[in-house]
Amino acid sequence: VYGLVRLRQEPHYDQTVQMVLVQQNADAWNTRDVSQPLLVAQNETLSALAEADDPDLIVWSETSLRYVYPQSASWYERNPVELPFTEFVPSLPAPFMTGAPFEDPAEPGVYYNSALLFDRSMEIVQWYGKRQLVPFAESIPFFDIPAVRDFFRRVIGLTGTWDAGPEDRLFTIETDDGPVVFATPICFEDAFAGLNRRFVAGGADLLVNLTNNSWSRTNSAQTQHFVAARFRSIETQRTLVRSTNSGYTAVVDPRGRVIASIPMFETNSLVADVPIHRPTNETIYQRFGDYLPVAMGILLLVVFGRNLLWARRRHARLEISSET
Image (cartoon, rainbow, N blue to C red; front, side):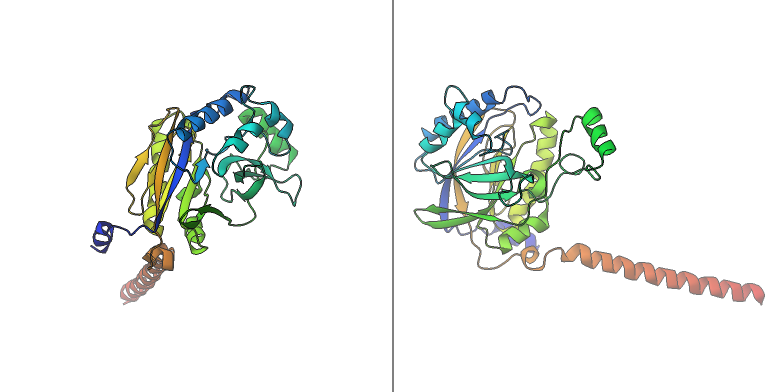
């Protein structure tokens, strides 16, 4: 009853941020032609900007850049041939965010699956490394052992793994109505309630998820991911923006309702007016976290202990009865 009442209450929006979300629909299994998907994403961005009013942020999906930047800057200076990436970004009218591999500036050789925020001079002004890695895909136990590493490379085709990001990080962009702070859970990180709770507790006004599920080639996998992610908007009372490679690109309001979206497996872009809700009161989950499973775990132990004690007493009574 409490949930029904709360969900019927319309949230008050403090401001609106205009975002350009790009769904390039690139084939994740195609590792030969890296330049063409980049050109598609650039063209979709330019097409959306022609319809945008005054965008505050342009967002591409997870791993839209395949090569590490700035280490591979010379490649981006030449590709795509029609419009090199290093010329494209400075032409944009707003900050640009994309998913990309990133080498830790403080620890050479440590690479993250990252969200990067570029300014118009091609400088990376902020970055976040994915912390919740996919088991046996992004993180493999004992991968440093040669036999294990050779097996995964030869049989599975995985050439390497990511390192876990060092810390929770937030991004800030300036708008006409003031600064907006947002977090960037990457891929299935938007399915982890505790991580997003920490983002919001740290000051995030907005959740911006970068995802690439095109490897699945199925609507079902992308739908399941979205269904899991959708709960984050309700739990935290924050708008959730999902910018994906092939779907499901959408904007979800603090009540869990989809207010804008792009069909799955379609090359397209979306100019979205994203509402910012800064609630004065925390949700029960935001305040207390995963209290319910903890409480149920304690209750389960109490019930188990009680039943065990009851079984022992009953067994003792049966033994006494058999002796008499």
